[in-house]
Image (cartoon, rainbow, N blue to C red; front, side):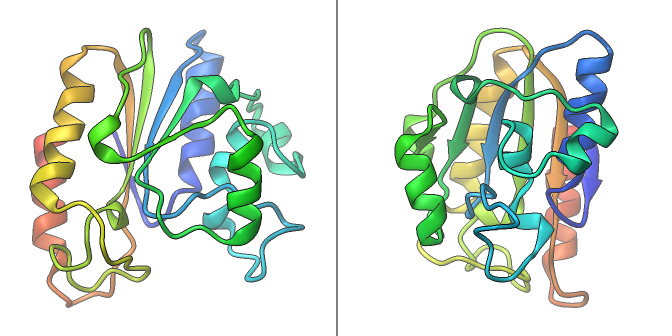
Length: 182
């Protein structure tokens, strides 16, 4: 399990799994799509691009440097991404990435990389998130969905991305989530 400040560490985790001979499917819980490219992003924020890099999109400088091979889009499930910029909507409409609400989560067969950006949880349950998104699933619903992925017994690595404002109260909840996942 890798606990980090944003989603970019996922590229290194997947590259490491590939180097170890594991070709994982991806289950990506996130309120955002993370499928921007340097060309489509208005902010240039790298944390909005890692899933697109994992599937082989856009500039491959970082991916090639770390030895990340593209994961087939059809092996990726994007769960509850609800804050999408127009270029992300356009990309996902033509991609084989399965973009699903949390209550329609398919469980992949075979080795799985489970990525959880805590902003997938409705902001009412996690105060102080840097990039909160309203109208999302509540914490118990996210926890139940994550447990269902774990129960399949195929998870080979977990990424937990936690971007919050220090002192806002999310630390204890996130620490409890990390302990449960471990």
